[in-house]
Image 1 (cartoon, rainbow, N blue to C red):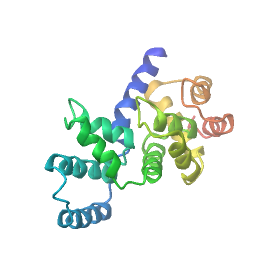
Image 2: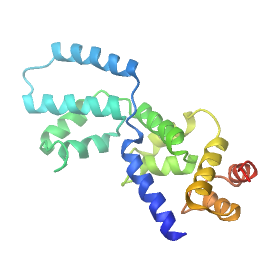
Image 3: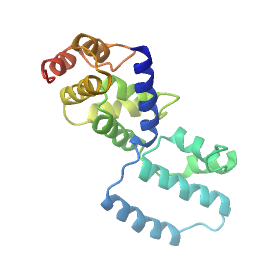
Length: 197
């Protein structure tokens, strides 16, 4: 079971890299319209490198709903954008982003696509290896994600049943485990009660 859990958790980490990056056609059109406005208002007293970094960061915020820290990290990463620390700090100081809203969109995506529990979403949003939102931004997301978590627990349970051939008792334990899915006992029991025989 430990090997299967490692495989599942590894897959979850990989999926987290893309979980917050879904964008609708309408969001894309709005982004393009805003980019045109930004292009006409660029401050030429700011170095081109800084403006380029700011443009990249705007995309990361609007399209991938990144946290401030993840944007900074991506801008300065050796395998990312490779901007220098000064350009990245200029971006952080001047980027007009709603990080609460970014955390919310990211959290909604985790719930919808990965069927995460409230506690796991919070952990992923605040994790140093995850989204790197502040505790306040993550709590805003948790407080504003719509719906209950019963269906997320059920979908997660079905995934364990179908892909790992686990017993109902083992699934329940995985759903409520601090090292597993972190669903509430009520959510986990709902999932078990509604699994296919």
